[in-house]
Image (cartoon, rainbow, N blue to C red; front, side):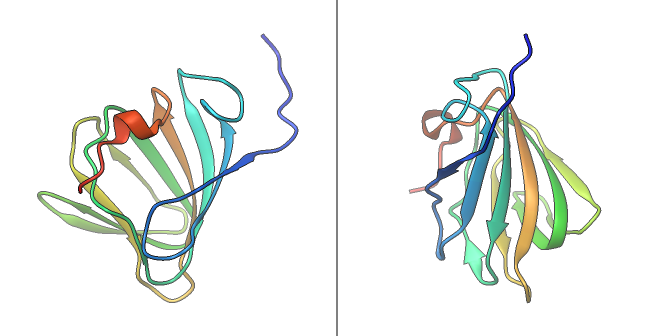
Length: 120
């Protein structure tokens, strides 16, 4: 299968400030359930609720710093670094530092609101 994806779909984000999610591959933009690939732009001071997703999430930071909190540890993932969060692990993402963060997230299987299991 060869398929050109002309542009991403902007997905509404959850969190304390407006974050941009550009889904290139996934359930919304390409009707793909095996994997989702999205570019995220989160402003300084953004934070989302914790979650315990049913998918593995691979995150590569392109600019700035993404703060990643797990039950055991906290990480500051900076430009050029990546982090893997395995499925069913509790995680919380934020961008508390100057300039926010820009990153690419790959989820296997694809992200869906039904499988992310955000904290109340």
